[in-house]
Every structure is written in C-alpha cells, then in structure tokens.
Length: 195
Image 1 (cartoon, helix red, strand yellow):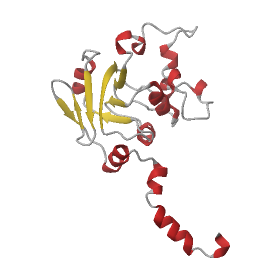
Image 2 (cartoon, rainbow, N blue to C red):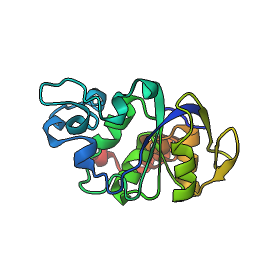
Image 3 (cartoon, helix red, strand yellow):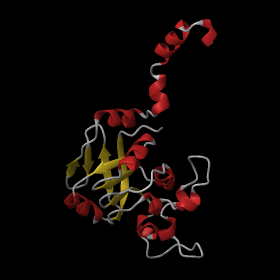
Image 4 (cartoon, rainbow, N blue to C red):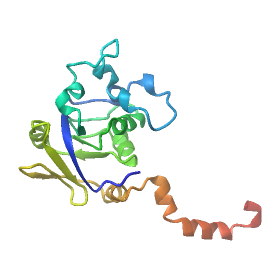
C-alpha cells in the first residue's frame, strides 16, 4: 500500500448524501478477480448513457474536473453493502481521498485498508471546498490532520492506528510482518510434529 503523508490535488464536488456502494460500483462489475481494473466502472450508471457514451451532465465527465483526485461529497458516503470493490474503484479512477460529512462504517474500513483516505468535515467546510476553482490545488496534511486551501485550513480527526497505517503504507500483511521475528521465534518452539 502506498504511504499517504502530505498530498496535493484538485477536487471535484459531488455533494449528494447517501451515495451507497451500489452507486459507487454497480454489482455488474464485481466479477473481476483482481483489486485493479475497476476505475473505468466508477459511478458507471451515472457516468455513462445507455450506449456507454459519457453522460455530459455527470460531474466526473466535466472537462474542468478531469484531473481531480479528491472527491468532495455529502453525508453517509459509502453506505450499503460491504463490497471492498467500491474503494478499489475510487482508487482505480485516481482518487486519493474522499472528503465527506460521514461514511458507512464498512466503507471507511475498506478505504483505509487500501490507502484511500476518508476525511470527515463539517458541511460548511465542504461547501467552501466544493466551490473552489477546479484548478485550485488542495493540500491534505495527514501527519498534522489538516485540509488546507489557499485561504484557510480545516482540522480533521482520525484514529491513531489508522493514521499510523496510512502514513507508513501498512496493510494487514505488512503489520503482521513487523512481528516476523516474534512469529519465527514462536514457530521454532513448536513441537516437531507441528512442522
């Protein structure tokens, strides 16, 4: 997993509430067996018309947001099913962070386990970020827990363990391997019939 420390990127506003994982990635695309390749199907039912032509009325298809890597959204983002594929689709599209009012619990966990940073900010802050010029670069400073615009900064909360994992790029396997010496020492103590 790629470490997330200080990130600079452009934003795209999609300020609806209750965007669930079925909207983020429709079930049609759950057949892929790798964690990659889901980006083209992000918000598929909204991004494309019936003939797979880009929907000109959907914000991700607006030319001014083509370089956006930070999604700014409403309340309860990622609610619904437990599909990890939703986080994979956001990452595959190029998003590094999602700034919302709140997140579905399972989505939040899936996002952080894959290196996507979900940030909770008050609606007033999100509204100000949502109307920034599309070319404006936002800074996310995870060590200091701040979202920084050219005019101001907004503090955000994150639990210490999740912050440690993201800053150091540690997934569950990497965390387990931090204790490799202890694991190997334990295995050496096992009776021979276990080996």
